[in-house]
Length: 257
Image (cartoon, rainbow, N blue to C red; front, side, top):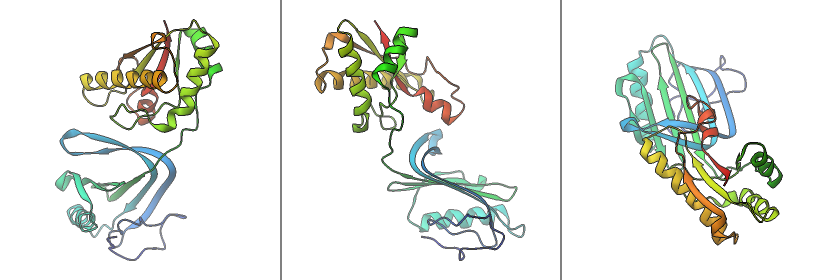
């Protein structure tokens, strides 16, 4: 931990406390904070890249003293992160934004000319899927519109391996298929629009194929009842301008053949 000054200032926002990763700039006041046990943030990386990280989320905002220049604050905070052992994966220089990464911990600091220091920290964790598709809901969706979203099928960012916690959702798909022996489905992968189009289409194809493979090999579904297809970012359900919208768009759907 890099400590700049001891924690605790009288003017701090009620209930807020300093980050355990890096101390505050001397004389700063902690103006707001937010903590979530399960959330996601898109970190800025070098070369215009982004990295979605899910886990324990903390956001802290300070107001640094008017007696300090932005350049002074940027230099001090940047040095503190580096001395704490973080690898700098993005550094805008004098602009004042930078991202550090160490193990499962990510921290992004944004320093503005108006005097604010915004710290966003996410510690990667194994998150739970709270809403899972049911066979009844899947059947209703197929009957009503010919397609339905399978909530609960999960992948790591940028990867096509079906995560173990997807099992409850996959089991509901198996129940659906057992209820109607004649039912055949397209398994369709969808992505958000972050990154190159060709890469997203390829990723959606590989994810759809991975789901089909899992259903066939682990759950003994007949291969001729399923056909994978990747739609990439072409069929969004929400705007990709927000993280909430992008999360909705990253999905697996079943489409009745």
